[in-house]
Length: 277
Image (cartoon, rainbow, N blue to C red):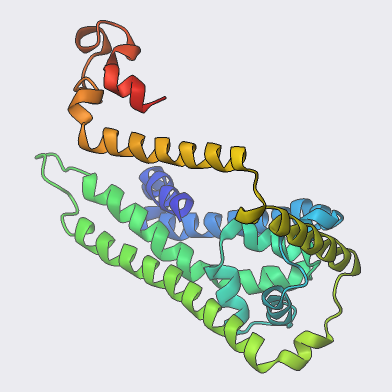
């Protein structure tokens, strides 16, 4: 969204001279769509698909989890659908594209499902253009488009609704898919290498949990942990309740040379050094 907002500010600022405001806003929306599709394709094929060769990466993303299998069922469907589009638009930009590559999904189908993001890009670019228009002054020094600031607030609200609404819809359909298509999910074979790695990690976790039970910890280690915890709590309370005794009053706008005699260390008083360890 910040990229599209910046496009809406920068491109129409110059483009309106030749394309007009409407043409320049449509142009920057098209540029935003091209950038989105190109970056998604690059992230899916160049990053995600290459990372899919590593067992640790597939294990880290939970390739055998119900959530990932449900996502695969939704995204692997050809054409456009509300669940598919909501995931591709509402999901986090970089992680979603990379996950598509790790799952080795069809690039043309993912690009098709990503295309409706234009309904997010256009109002965002429009908001950026309106923000710029609100700052334009006429010859008398008055705003040339006095209404632009108000309209930009409305279009930014629309952008937020589309963004967060698609996230909610994506979460809903993933939950519904996991609950109602359990047979299809079970039919998806587990990644054997990842399953072996998961089993090994589970065994190591059990061993770690057994040997780190409080009753199993030696007395010296217990004493050290308890002392450390006590010191941390005491330090927090000292800084919180005795701030004026710990630090020299100083703000971001103050000069280090004038207020701290040119030494950052002078920010700490004696009690501050004690609290900081």
